[in-house]
Length: 473
Image 1 (cartoon, rainbow, N blue to C red):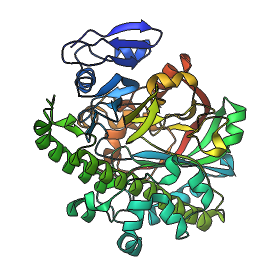
Image 2: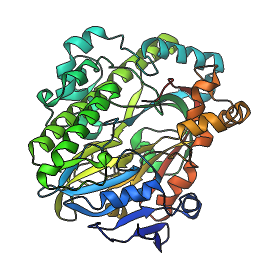
Image 3: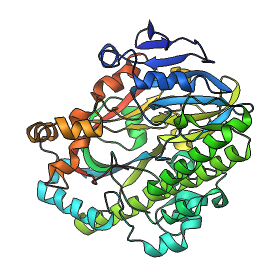
């Protein structure tokens, strides 16, 4: 593996060597660089991705980079649309894991803890959390599943589960084209009864406060006001997307040799984009992307119901809904590319034609969630973000594995780290793997890109109450 070399402020390069076809570029400040070992798994994974056929350089590592399955989380890999490959592992298990931010006109300081707790309970009554959670919308999951898989959030809004403005503020307007349910296995379809469920792992629902506004103009456009209550929804395609990644990793791993592709490992199993296996994966992946958009749309509907029950208030406006794990055909550097983002957020600069109409002047929001007592950020991309295929970080990034966090973080450390934030469980052991000390300092992560002008910070949100489920999915 090549030596990680500093090439500028907050920029590092793994120069092309050996089987690598392109360089790997990383964005790290001094603190984050000191946490990354020279022979780390995530650096090797970037080098492995840089060796795949048709890769278009550089492969990019975000400040929140950490080891994943195949491509590291916090990784971006672009491949040529013609002559390149698609890799299920470079998208990840939780296809279209993403974040939706809702804004309110409710001053957070008028909500005491009993009221926040009542809101949490009303939400939990409607939205199951944890591994294996089943939707209360049984009929919709049964009779409306095909529509959700092919039309995403659009299908739900057409049935009355939201408003047109919700779609205007979603990546891909809440529906990725090309979805074909024929490309999805029966086993994956059996795992699709989870609309309006949260899941476990790093997924969460969070009520917070707009603590700081740094860009008044953008914040006004996004509908964010200092001191107002916000709701963050962080979840994805649940077991359905996980099964699709599992299925197609096996298919691609077996088929790769038929196309003369040497794989560095099963996690980066890949096939030509235009091969039957590649085309089928993209069609199945689009179903999972749409399922996740529909999931967050239905969760939004249920949260609005909960607010109506407790506060008599349903005016929760979608600020934006953005995917973290996805592969899409995009134009960059004059080329049509298939951009794999795994734990990375698209951030189109102002004026980019693919921005929603309402956000052309500002660039759409990129929403970067923190952990249970660390801030979340709303950012925008700049022209300089074209260097990273218009991509920015998606969160803080882990510094401790789930098992290590459970083993080494004490009850005292956990309680101190979450402070006064309300949690939905009294059993701290259920949340140890997601404790704030298990993550990098999100301020370092966000500042790394802001310092070099790839992003512009719009607002900082501070959590007040967090709902999380047990288990890792």
